[in-house]
Length: 296
Image 1 (spheres, rainbow, N blue to C red):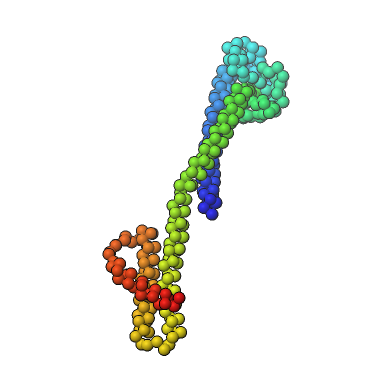
Image 2 (image 1 turned 45 degrees about the vertical axis):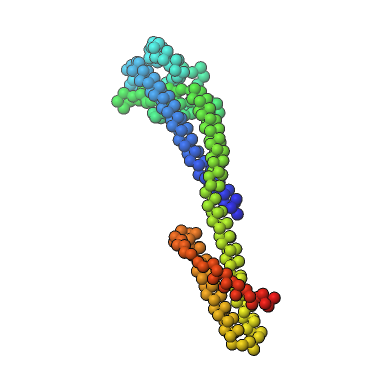
């Protein structure tokens, strides 16, 4: 019974700690993941800030539209921006107002439709290849010139994130094992007073049964003696009745003593000891047991 309770305590302690550890690990993972994404977004926005001012806008005839971007002059004649893009492994794509790809730094275009997301968006090309993209609409007044999309592969981020997941998983498993061991030890300490209290209760019950058995047996013997020999003289009957009265009083005192012991064990009252005459107590015991001895 106590081992089952101990296991339950250890299991609850371990479960609650495991949940807290998982929540803590998820918090760390979310913080690191968000921080790395924010750094990549800052880099992409910085590239947009460099590329956008370098765009050469030309006024064209009405049949071609009002304005047009000179792609060759905008992207090919600014080596500093190109070097920045190559160093940071960033790819640039330019789309016309209809969403048609006109220029790119990629060797082969990604099969990704144009979608306007100025805040950054993660695109999954394959299981091992992720892209972070920011698309900015370029316009003059209310006239849309096109869309500038910058992309950054997340291979520099995927590997550290996976390693972080592995490290956190190992740490959580080791912590749960340690917490389970500590929980088992602490539950043993916590349940020890309960076991001691239960043992005390068993001992108290056994002692009470033992103390009550002898007076009850003596009372029963005296009553049977009176019923079996009604012709006994008055003095003998009176003597036995006095013994019965004393035994009854003793039982009453014994019940009070047991109640006192129960209260004393629970800490309700403090013991107040007083001396008792042992010779008188022994004489009473001899007198009570004399009738039982004569009958046997």
